[in-house]
Image (cartoon, rainbow, N blue to C red):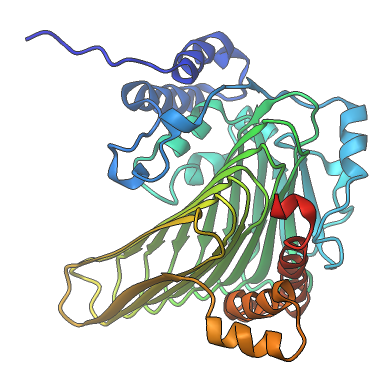
Length: 447
């Protein structure tokens, strides 16, 4: 029987030809080169994900990606300086900031002086220096095969390694600030390892920003390891350019009695997929992951989760809010898997969407896979328009329609923001949502 040769897209052919040309210039010792080769071989076999793959049914990257920009290189000083001048929505929050420009960490524009108990290493340098933390942790947060992780592993050339010593309690949040500074389309592939020691307590911010009108692409992978009894809050803001492609993976591995809360807020990228792979490796873990997506125009935003309850007595909570205007498309896919050993699991997942336009679309697919018999698990999804009676009530008291809608929508997404423990960050996220809601009254949003 003859082998079938798959038809490759332009983007796939570009990526397949690029890796052999540049791999010698990518940082890494022999073990990293072997890791890259294995990852690229995986991508070469599978290609870009498409709708015939269940997890990618609603986000067909093979069709959606039209170009494969050149891989970003270490930016020159004038580019770094321009990036340092950009304001960020998270500026009002006092924080220790680790700044990456076009995927590469730059200590000169980051916060000078780290808190006691925190160490930071440049991933670009660590990959080429046989860094023990790379050998022990890179790719270890999840074993789930994934094409985005494979592509990132093959092409990774920037990022940071952050370690928080056991029993360290950080007074200020630690921010990973990713800035894309370019006038031409580029591809960035940062890789981040965050290793939080036993009993440590940290608020981790992650922000992504870049220019409008430039079709740059980001494929970022952040791996977080939480030791026993650690407490981690991870709050992510995706506020890239309107033509940007923002592909991101959060891989989390937690040990016994760890407490973890994450929230992802998406406002502006044209195409975004945020995927979360979490393994609850020890008993008594409390895992909470939420999201707020505010979509307009022709934006396509996908949130996909896979939560693996691998130990007894753990809880997980997922709450996702999506607001869709114009011709935007939202996707929520959530899977909770409860292994046979994971008795006394308590897992709940909810996706709620409000459609402000007849042309907007929302795709929901919550799933449960339960192999234990002593569990309390449930999921749900709702999708609909604003309540006409409540809207009429507000308008009858003098509020213009858009202001009345903004008030209702602020309450709708506020349920997710209320779960943010850090007061200052919660206020900033609420303000970001408020700005988006007010912008619906401008002519560009109504066109």
